[in-house]
Amino acid sequence: MSSIQVAFWVIAMLVVLAIAFDFMNGFHDAANSIATVVSTGVLKPGQAVLFAAFFNFVAIFIFELKVAATVGKGIVQPGVVDHYVVFGALIGAIAWNVVTWWYGIPSSSSHALIGGIVGATMTKVGAGGLIGAGVFKTLAFIIVSPTLGFLLGSLLMVIVAWLCRGVRPQRVDGIFRRLQLVSAGLYSLGHGGNDAQKTIGIIWMLLIATGYASVADKMPPGWVIWVCYIAIAIGTMFGGWRIVKTMGQRITKLKPVGGFCAETGGAITLFLATGLGIPVSTTHTITGAIVGVGSTRSASNVRWGVAGSIVWAWIFTIPASALIAAAGYGLGRLLF
Image 1 (cartoon, rainbow, N blue to C red):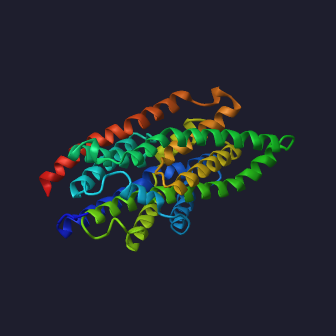
Image 2 (tube, rainbow, N blue to C red):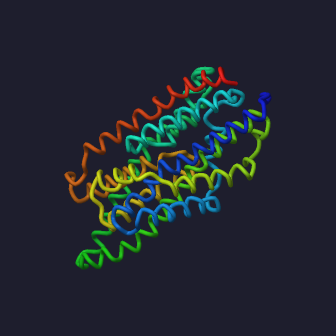
Image 3 (tube, rainbow, N blue to C red):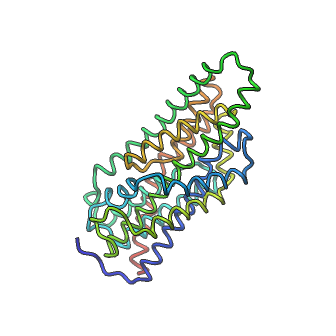
């Protein structure tokens, strides 16, 4: 595959823009990792974001770069990607993240990026520039990840309720306040492992297109990996409270036992998806798990109006970010 000739400053600018997206991903999606542990009172917000940021970074030592490979080499056909496509994709993802963060809507940074890549690519060459298998498995997990989160969250809640039958509620609460630190750590690990790799993937995509990496390489340059994991961890440290409130209490009221089950179900889902190399939404996953936990008590315990508004945000994320990315692609061609 022949590489394109691009000025170094353009490549550097796009790398910085990608890192900015990575930071925003941590900032925007911090709520997914800490909402339940904050809302149940196990940790204060300041403690929780530091806790989550630590595990976001530690994920660098745990997971293989399968998600990065999918994003970098498995969604767009070799030879199609150029700096305009990458610019458009990042503009689409960042713009949609800003809008949804501002309104406190827990949408998916991951699918905003995928939508951005798809929108910019289709603007350049049409649907033929996409790799069907990569796009299909990503789209399929829009349904699979929240469904699996729902099933695992509700199943764990039923199992825990059966195991703790006859135990005083105060004792159950005390046990799961401690266990929730474990589940929150695991979920933050899964968040870092899956989400940081998406930014690694788009930088890798850019480096392959411009000749700074080869499509045959099994890994991107080491500096890309380190910078992306550090950026998402720092972003998580500055995570926004707006979305924490929606995720932690407005969908359903949670106690430590419910928080533990939701986070554990979500973490299992993220670990599975990352192992399969599928970029999934941490937002979708934890939302499904929280709804699953709430529904085991009674369907009325779930505020379906709030959950419904979140679903609409999910539906609009990919097409909205794709449209913005199309405009970003055109803007990029005007700028450089």
